[in-house]
Image (cartoon, rainbow, N blue to C red; front, side, top):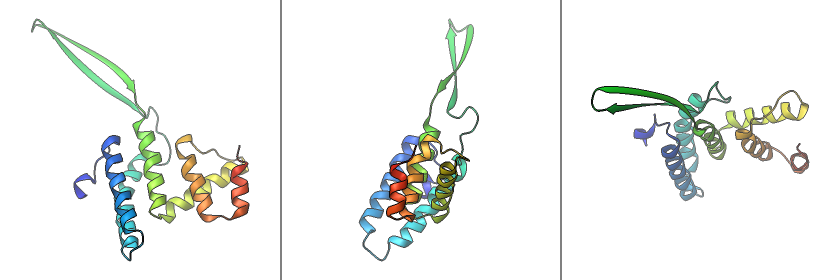
Length: 152
């Protein structure tokens, strides 16, 4: 797994994260699940620290440069931006898996953001809403469920 520690490509990260979840499922009813959860949280925190909680300006804009050689004499360079949202997708996936592996810091932050949203003093970005709702439910009771069912 250490070979993937610095990986940030969404497709590769998704595969690695799915493997982590599969291993967790196998260990779920064993004494080793807590130790594995700590390993997974440490692994995923590096990605979380890079993608952060908030979208950055121009997030998802990947710049591609194409060089066209015409008759080996003329070099044309065309630049354009292709809108990609893989960082946003990665953020939601990593936060969700950190919750799955029991990262209390992430759970607390999600609850804090949900509370601010309910109070009208903040909003939850669309890519993190499911994480916030899961966190609130994991810490709540029947009253919390009723609150979530009436979220606007």
